Image 1 (tube, helix red, strand yellow):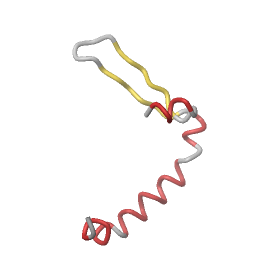
Image 2 (spheres, helix red, strand yellow):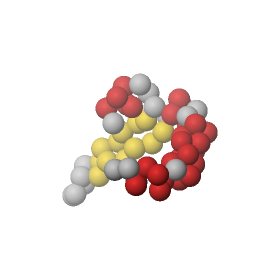
Image 3 (cartoon, rainbow, N blue to C red):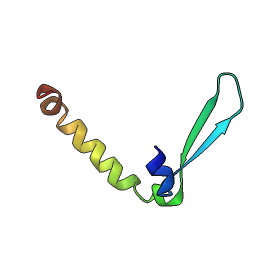
Image 4 (cartoon, rainbow, N blue to C red):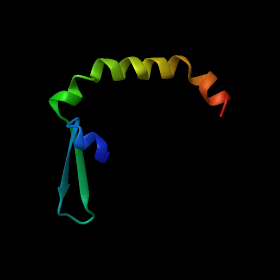
Length: 55
């Protein structure tokens, strides 16, 4: 997650609560990857049985 923060893809907000709560959100640069990430997810769903079968 640190690399995603360093590359300005996400923000990390730490709340002083019990238990400690951390919230992640996409930054504009990260939002630009949504279409690509959706395609990767679709690919994973399509090949799920092949991927799991070879673990």
